Structures are given as C-alpha cells and as structure tokens.
Amino acid sequence: MHLYRIPRLYCPYATWADQALTTKIAVHTQAWLRKFELLHNEEQFDFYEKHHFAALIVSSYPNASEKALETWCDLNALLFLVDDHMDETTTFNSPEEMLLLEGKFMEVLHKGTYNGTQKTLCAFNDFWQRAREISTVEWQQTFVQNIRDMFAGSLWQLKHILHAKKPALRDYQLLRQYLGAAHLATDCLTMMGDVNLPEEITSSVLYARLTGHCRNAICYSNDLFSLSKEMSRSTAGAAFNLVSVLSNAWSLSMEAAISEAVRVHNEEVHQFELLSAVLLSRYPAYNKAIRKYLEGLQYLMTGNIHWSTKLTARYPHIYEGN
Figure: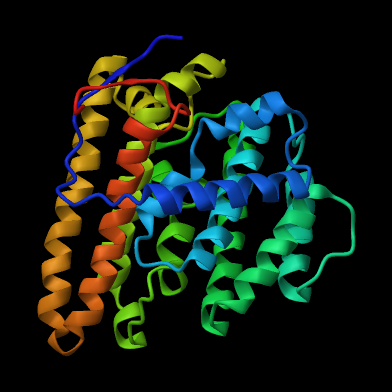
C-alpha cells in the first residue's frame, strides 16, 4: 500500500480524551457486537478492535452521558461494518436492491420493532429501542430523515458505480455529508451534547450553512486520511474521495489534488469560524446555547482528526501535522 502524505489540516480547536471512559465504552460495544454476531471470528474482532471506534465517539462528544455514548458507539460501529461490507463486496446489483434494504430500515424506525432474523437489522432495532429511551420525539423524527438522506446518498453513489460514471465535483460536495453520515454526527447533538436551540435558529439558513461547513470539514478530512486505504482497495481509483474527484475534475496529479483538498478542507473551517461569529451576533439572547452547539461541532471536527491521526489503525497514511 502506498502511503500518501497529508499536510497539516487547519482546525484550531481543543481535543478531548477520557481513557477510562473510552475503555468502558469499548468493552460495551465489543460485547454488543458479539451479542448480535456482527463479526464472525476472533480475527475480525481483533481487526476492528484496532480501529478504536469508542475513542472516536468519546472524543467527539465530551458532554454525553455514558448511556448515550454506549448507544451511539454501537450505531457507529454498525455503520462502519455495513460500509466496509459494501466496499468489499458487490452487495447491490441494482438500485431496487438498495431500496429494499432502505425499506427494511424504515420499517424498524416506523414500527419500533423488528421480528426478523437479519443480524444487522436486529442490531439496528436494539439501537433504536435504546435511543428512543434517551431522546426526544423531535430528535427521533430528525433521525428518521437522516437515515433516508443516508440511503439517498448511497443510492446516488450506487448508480454511478453501476454505470461506471465518475461523480461531478459539485454533486460530490453536495452529497458527501450523507455518504459519510456527518449529518448524523451533527444532528445527534441534542442527544449527545445536551444542545437545545430554538426553531428560530435551527430553521435559519445561517444555521444550516454553518452546520454544513462542519460536516464538510469532517468528511474532507476523512477523505484525506482514508485515501491510501481506498486507493489500495479500489480499481476505480477511490472515485468517491474528494482527492480523486478534484484530480478528475481539474486534471491534477495526486499530490496537487491532495494539496487542493487540504485547501478546500481549511476553507470549510474558515467559513465555519466566520459564520460562528455571525450566529452569535445575530442571536445574542441565545449565546449560551449557541456556544454549546458550536463547541459540540468543534469537538466533532477535532475528534475526527485526532482519532484518524493518532488513535486508529483504520487509515494508514503519513500526517505531517504529527
């Protein structure tokens, strides 16, 4: 595997770590994976244990309760497993097959129960039962839409793959957050970060733009750190990675495309900074709650970078920021 050099990314926020809590969450999620037989042998357990999913969740949500961390870490691990399975196999041969799976997930969410034997859906149902106990109805409605959006992004990707079509840069930038589930990460802050903002703010264009910049920064940093892994496994040259998309769009070498992807990531963080100040100035009566939300988004960005560069073996690379 060729390891790409990734320049230091701009993200001027604090990181969070709690090793004792991380260990507790890791033990819980390992037991949960075993309970639902989501991994088939000890070799697979060892492989995923080195990914340290719990460290990502704990460092991303410092204000979450232990129960919430357990619940969200389980979902996070499940999504990683599903994503890896889709990457490594020809899971879907048609859009209809993916739509059928989406329907099964929606059935779990709408009925609140699952009586089948498919292990992924059994595990997802267990997550959903526990998440409903610690969340509001409003968050649950948002989560259902989040899952729809995630499948819509995956369907867009699948259609490109089936037709051997490379994604256009603009389309990729619009849909990347749903491919990487970054929208789930930010929208769960009401449950994971004790964030409560009035609809006056959450329905505003300013809020949506600011949140979008955070999501993009998370996904673009992930694209950079996962580039070596994706290139080694893909005959299409990691087609759904910002680096490859930029390279194809502008006829750039990989090195030049990496530099451009870093610039794009850094610009997302700069825009996040600018809009954070605007949001605070526009709604002074809610500054305390807004600052809590902004802090939550900041930890998501730094948590992803810290985990990717220091804590996990999932993404082999050379990071010049270390």
